[in-house]
Image (tube, rainbow, N blue to C red; front, side):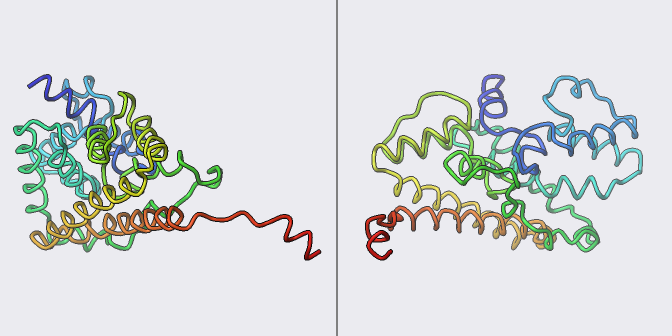
Length: 271
């Protein structure tokens, strides 16, 4: 089980709030610091707090909910924060090709327990469905859109709306008839596109990504139908996946109709 834990949570699905909710997709964003301050203010200091990569680890967050329940001091903003990303993290575990069946079952049980016990007033209090998806925000200092920009977008769930693990990227490559070297998640994703370009398999990769995106869309919609109180939280994720669908469509259009350089000779004659 230790090997299964390492394979899943250290190498593939990162169980941290900022990994899902920060536009960078990186750990230890502002939400992690806020979680640490909440823990301190409520006297929550389990030994595991010093064994994880960031305070917003899903296990610590769920433990904090139990701590609050025992003390009779609910924290609605924190509960809202968890409902934004923990069910999505659980879906990522459930869809992870390399996940041990035990962890898939734990993820499914956790997701169901969370969405079934949403207080009736919580979604109305925060209106999450009206938030603008992070996927539409491009940093002002972003370089001209290129492969690195696309990879960063796809690997940040707060922007793309879905989670692509290293194992999932490898599975996409195999389905497209390619083999990728071991590396960081960013390097593997970048190599996926580079190798596809060299092999003429870009269209196949786009098809596979579209299929993966459709599966996430279906999961969000199914969860919202089965648990209507989570529907307002599903809204922003569906907006993000719609933005990713638009990006994939633009990439396909460029592939099918490559832009042609204007003829300098023609401009000279017109002049």
